[in-house]
Each structure stands twice: as structure tokens, then as C-alpha cells.
Amino acid sequence: MKLTKPRLSFWQIFNMNVGFLGIQYSFGLQQTAINPIFLYLGAPEDMLPILNIAGPVTGLVVQPIIGAMSDKTWSPRWGRRKPYFLIGAIIGSICLFAFPTSPVLWFAVGLLWILDVGNNMAMEPYRAFVGDKLPEKQLSLGYQMQSLFVGAGILLAMGSIVLFQKIFGAEAVSDDGVIPTWMFYSFSLGGILSISTVLWSVLKTPEIPPSEEELSEINEAKSKPFMERVWQPFNEIGLAIKEMPKFMWKISAVYLFQWYALFVYWQYITPLFMKTMDYGISDAASQSAQMSLTYNIVTMVVALALVPLTLKFGGKKVYAFSLIGTAVALFSIPFIENMTLVLAPMVLFGIGWAAMMGIPYTMVSKAVPQDRRGVYMGILNMMIVIPMGIETLTFGPIYKYLLGGNAINAILFAGVFFIIAALLAFRLNEPKSEINE
Image (cartoon, rainbow, N blue to C red; front, top):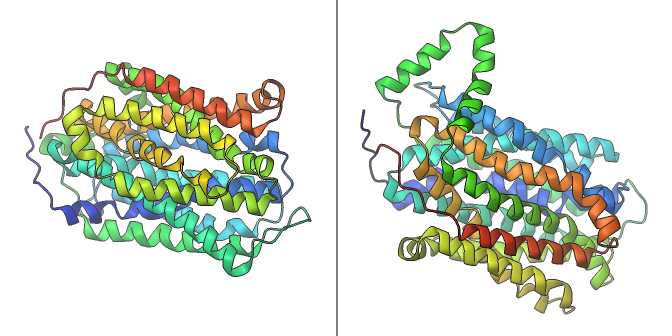
């Protein structure tokens, strides 16, 4: 049955995406504050990749399963996707409040696992939620609005770090196991935002009821024996991979290099400043937070501006050139020793981040059937976390033995991978929609 979706106003699309602010605040802390906490608790630099393996593993397992489950869920009161990202936000909020109280390294690592489960549980249904609500002509605006909130959430996280360091002092910590005061306030703010912003979107945005055909499939799934229902998400994932559009196989190659490089950047930007500017951990973490502040301000500014550009030139070209700009930024950073000038390359990085967080989702949403959008968005996330998992397992030895334990070489290595990702992005063929609107 052909489904006609109503065109939504700008503010309806805005309200729908507000929850991404809290989710991305949490991810912002993971990018910049988690690794310094590990360092404060005594972790050696070459162990940082393996200590971050929680993100790839939980993303690989949680997102596609939750996506498949949400495809087969419907509640007249709570909807299809909203129950999942609301529960995920609650889990994430609890973990954020607990993180700066970590007494030892293993406790912080364990919390990261639980936090990632919550964030991934919230993230995947949210991607599908936006695609469910919007007609095809508004998909680009919807996903670039998510990109705007990605920038805003991470921007707020980084801003909180800078602000609370100024208020409470970015004190040097000489003893392992001591986490500075400013960390408590940044993480507590995240705990509040994680739940409050998602609640805003849940209460402000009703979901579109499933068609009679979809409802029949959902009820049929509910009537199956318990063990069959347990295995159903795994069967859905396997079938979806088997029938996956060719476009998604191509974008997986882009993602392999793009996300490997991003994980290297997030892990080694703080050690980079400890080397190039002779900073301690607190000062280096503060500088990396300012870098994130800068590129996420740019992301907020340009996210919606990319919508007309993608309509005029095509998503593929805008995406590929944005990746090249990101590579140029990473090639520049290690050779700039001025604290202010080092922020300049983040303009290019911010444009790239805005493109990465919006354009691929728009293209994929057009390529997959609506009644399986949840599982395919989960599979798209698998294409993110598999490279991250590969990075956590491989980059420690690469960093130690091939790159000489030098954070400068690590950032340059990431730049090369962005160039490869851009070249592969030029090979993408933008999909024709297979979605009934």
C-alpha cells in the first residue's frame, strides 16, 4: 500500500531531532574526556585503542538487533522507535553521572561498556525514526538537522569542559587514580541532557502508525513461540545483509577508512598536544576540547547549508570533497605550534563532520525499504563500528612499532586514510529511492 507522508514544518523537524543533542553530548565526552580519564587512572598510551573497544563491539551487536526489533514493534501509546531510544537515554544518563566517580581503571572501562550500550540503543532507532516520519524530499533536511544537533551536542560537551576547567582549574594530577573536579560537572550536565532532550522529542513528535500490512506482520511476529521471537532479530539481520542494496556495499568501503581514521584522531589528538606543545594531560585535554569546540561550531553553521549544495551538485561530490578537506586538516595540525592557529584546520574538519553525519544517511534512507529501515540503519552502523573494532585491535601495535610511538605520525596516518575514503566516495552511485511515500 502506497503511503503518503505529510510534509513537516521546520520546527516539527527541529523538535524531532532535539534528542540528538543529549545523545551527542555523551558521544562528545567519549571523544574527548574518556581517554583523559583512562590516562588519569594510569592507562598507558598504547593501551588506549583496546580500552575503547566497547564502542565498536556494542555498536556491532546492539544497533542492528535493536533496529530489527524496532521494525517489528508497535504500541499505540509509545510508538515504534521511541521506546528504544528513551530506554537507551536513561541507561546513558545513569552512566554519565557515575563516570567521574570511577575509583580504578577497570571500573571506568566497565562503565564505558554500559554507556555504549545505552547510546547505541538510543542512536539506531533515532536514525530510523527520522526516515519514518519524513517524505523523501525532506530527508536531506531531516538528516542534516541531525548533523546540526550532532555538532551542537558535541559542542556543548566540549564547551562544558573548557568552562568548568576555567572555573575549577585544569589542575595537574600527579597521582594515578585521581580525577579532577571539572570532570564531575561536565559528566553531570551530560546525565541531565541525555534524558531531558530525548524526552522532549518523545513528547513532541508522534510516530506514524504502521500500515495494515505492516501491522499484520508485527502481530504475526508477536504470536510466534518465545524462542522463535528471540532469534527473529538475528534472522532479520542475516536476511537484510543477504538482500542488501549494492550501494551499501560500496559505502562500507568508504566507511572502513573514514571511521578507522576518525577513531585514530579521537584517541591521539590529546597525546599529540602532549608532544607538540609539551602539555600535561589536563592542558592537552583542554586543547583537544577547544579543537572539538571549533569544528562542531562549524558543523552547526554549515549543516543545513549542505542541503542546497547536495541538491545542486549531488551528495556524492559534496561528501567526497568534504573528506578531502578533513584530510587536509589532519595533515596540517601536527605542524602548527601556535595554540590559536591550530584551530584553523578545524574549519575543514567541521565541514567534513557535518557531511559525514548527514549525507550518507540521506542516501541510504532512499535506498532501503521503509518496513526494514530500522535493521538497515543498524547494518549501516555495523559499517561504522567494524572499522573502529579493527582500529582498536590493530592500531596499538601499528602505533608502537610502525609509527614509533609518535602521536604526530598517528594523526598523519589518519589523514592518509581520509584521502583513501574520499577516492572511494567518488565511486558511489547515488541510489534511486525504493521507498513508498
